[in-house]
Length: 81
Image (cartoon, rainbow, N blue to C red; front, side):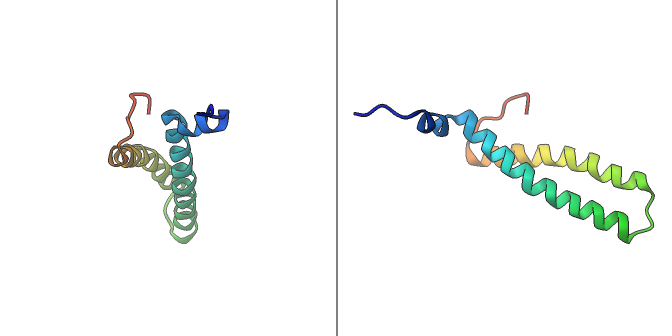
């Protein structure tokens, strides 16, 4: 049996897989939130701090959503996430 290459070992590592999933999630989710906040800020008469509240709420919601996604995929959720 051949030894696994470094790249195969890295791709099989659960921490690496979790990192890739988290990175992809944040990229897509973050872009969506930026678009929403931009259109909210330019299309409404809301004060500037309302957009800041959107970003704060999105940070909290994204953590909850990502933990839910990880639990559905069967990945472990660590306290630091």
